Length: 423
Ligand code: GDP
Ligand code: IMO
Ligand code: MG
Image (tube, rainbow, N blue to C red; front, side):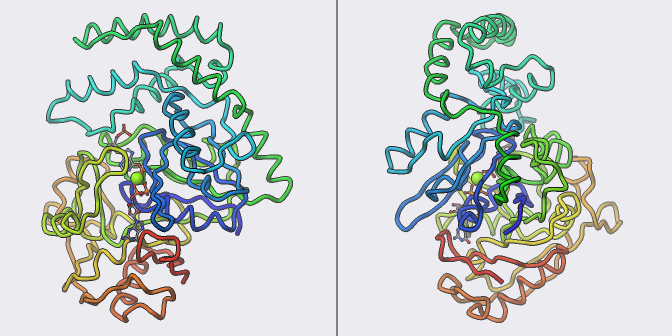
């Protein structure tokens, strides 16, 4: 396997965690390069379920190294909790298999409070964030007023910088009518986390370039999805980082010419959690999947909105990310659907659209135009080879790959590692 960027091609929760875990068998290093603990990546091993938020999903394979790159925003207390949680379940996490960038920005309690308060203020126009403080933390980074892991590693400097930031943010919180936060307790809590994280912190850019020099193969684990990208998504109903392929370079310090392929992960249908336009949303599809106990958020537990496969969106995702290959997950979610719909283009004001409008209000007005395909009406969960799939399921996969404009490489028919078909 060469150096691979794995991205979500829809609105997040495409099954990236499962595919990363599968692909890590052939990689040496797995790198997260953007997002924070808003992500929830599920990996199922037999009867054990792991949900990773900040730590790359490669951590579950012993002997692989995981890196949290400079582009990630880290809540240090949450990260220590995640490390402890994994250790309690027997997963080895040490400075030998986890390296954290000293340039990654910190998420602080006032970021979370501001995230929550801004959502309250927005009322019915809220984004539906995960309330993990992601937007305000990236906001501080862009404003050049953020605190980084490197600061946290220098207690006196950190405390001093934190004090100034707390004064500023408590004034803002007060003005917004929200509760203020105690400097003393945040300082103590964060310095405790600093001690636990100290062995992991390094210059990850140098680490990754050394690894490349030594012929190591790297898998870049995207978080969120293309349409949650701060530039290319359904702004303002997006997250605050570049979730598309370019984010893997800026968020890790590995340059574009070292990247060999881009793998886009997408569900065989579409889901979205949080607010914002979703042209192919369909109440009957949501009801069906929720009744099967599926499509509840891995981070917040919220029910995901569900709908038909949207090839207008995935075609755009292929273009923006440079997707070469596709992993289509959750094919089994359509096992009992008699007639499956696929959106091939949109209609807006009598015009046919081949690409999604960039304006979210216009996107919300778009009417999806569907083709229909016959369902296969049988279980695919036991299929292990492409040939094991019913002919109608193969035709469906072929059609969505053709409409998306990339080669089908992986089909997933269940959450387990073995329920993965390499095409
Ligand atoms: P991620 O954020 O992209 O890693 O995706 P999530 O973990 O948030 O959500 C994907 C959900 O689908 C998880 O519950 C996975 O265990 C599950 N999953 C992934 N692939 C498949 C599949 O092919 N079939 C089924 N039934 N579940 C899958
Ligand atoms: P993974 O990596 C799905 C959504 C939120 C909200 C918007 C902004 O598991 O695919 P934020 O908290 O980032 O400011 O919220 O983005 N969102 C996700 N949706 N999967 C995710 O991550 C998400 N991370 C954020 O629901 O709509
Ligand atoms: Mg998720």
